[in-house]
Image (cartoon, rainbow, N blue to C red; front, side):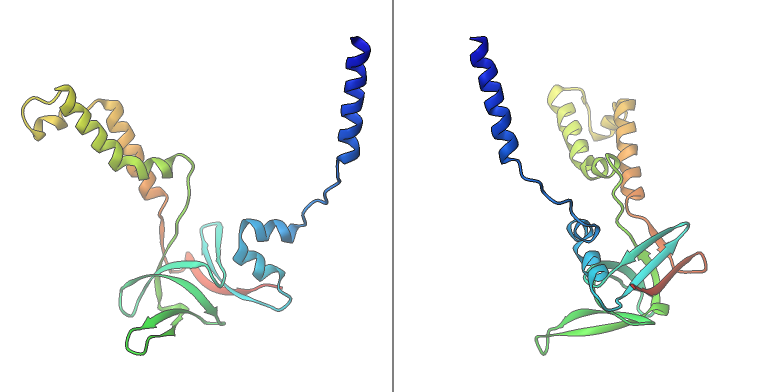
Length: 197
């Protein structure tokens, strides 16, 4: 029996060793393209590519062609959430559907016309908790009514919340505000155009 187990172990080991193929490690360019396709295309292309850069504090956020860019303009005060289609030295553009002609037209926005930039930041656990707060609140209110904790009216329900519930609500609201920061473009926060080499 021991000889049979030894033979089986050797057979399995040699078969596994003979079928193992050596896979080459992915290059840096392949890894960048897998994690962020727009940045990967910009970095791998042979010509120089312009891209937008937001410098805030000691951090930097890059926006390549094809990335979504949320901003507010100085000229009309409206908030835009558009995909960057073209970047020049002093402006960028995005496409808008003209309903009269039924065609897409490029809207050119100078960098000096951008008043505020909005970012989407993912903070582990806190961002997800902020998204689930309305559901958690509805679940606790329905649960309190179903168990008979609330006797009189809705006003009485606010006094019956447990401090742990209020802490979870506060963390969720903080998660909403911390994961969606906005930066006013001024001397400390700059929006500019850089080129890849």
